[in-house]
Image (cartoon, rainbow, N blue to C red; front, side, top):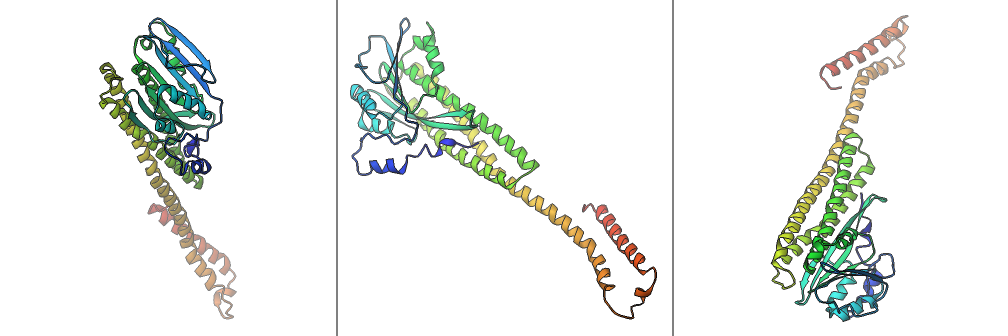
Amino acid sequence: MFSKPLKDAIPSRKKRKKKVGLPPGTLIYTGDKVKEKPKIKITDYNEEIYDFQEMTEIQRDLTKIEDKLIRWIDIYGLVEVKVIEEIGRQFSLHPLVLEDILSPNQRPKLEDYGSYIFVVIKKLVWNQDDNEFEYEQISLILGKNYVISFQERDTNLFGPIYERIQVPKGRVRLMFADYLFYILIDIIIDNYFIVLEKVGEEIEDMEDLLIKNPEPETLQLIYRLKRSSLELRKSIWPIREVINKLQREQSNLIRDELQIYLRDIYDHIFRISDLLENYRDIIFGMLDMYLSSVSNRMNDIMKVLTIISTIFIPISFLAGFYGMNFRYMPELVQPFAYPILITIMASIALVMLYFFKRKKWI
């Protein structure tokens, strides 16, 4: 298991160089994702009304929202900076917010701008084909009667939410924009459990491999697991601060009724953090386990070689002693000297093997 987007999480040097010396709020997309054409999904709903539109460019004023309607603007693809600029112009978003949206290496954070709340969060998704997790930045903006989400590409993460909104008289249709804001964060965090479950399976397989047959390649896999766990930690731990701050914010955009849902999210992220720390401890313990396994394996090899050497020491002595070419050695002229010497050597080897076996050295 390895996190494929490690290089994707860090902007390329060329794109970072472009921003050097530019004033704050300069809009340049610094990500390395596949350059998809922008896709804008606009969903308007309330208890009785549901309307969905999809477009590739902004053709009207999206701030004109009918009374008692909730609008969700879901934007995929950040390559076209002019789309982000137009959204910022229409909703009066701060230039630094737009800059953060276009810089997908942001640390998860929350900023309250009074008329809207801006949240950066990391999305983790398990890629079944490559057997690894992928992550990318998702930016969310909560307004009085609207929610705007920004993603680098369409992974259908929010597909279940679209299905829930389409259900007449469903909970989403009965609630306000802050509830939509909550369920977007909730589904992102729920995917963390799936990723961590897969990580746990990888750890179990690695432990079995360590016990049965640790190879040099196993050490490389352990280090890859270790690096992936560190990347997970960097993505997950700051979210605790984001959710905690979201609970404490005295904002008119978040109703008191939503606090119980925010506490539930905080409980989830707390459990995820604990689980991740347990996995990290196990992975670090694997390094010791690998070194111990290799050391034990080397000890077994050295024990076998030592036993073989010990057995052959007296045998080599006899062979060397009677291998001397002195003319008057009486044993050399005896007719049964050779078979007797071979018998003595074999007997010594058998006696020593019996002794080692009795001492449980072999």
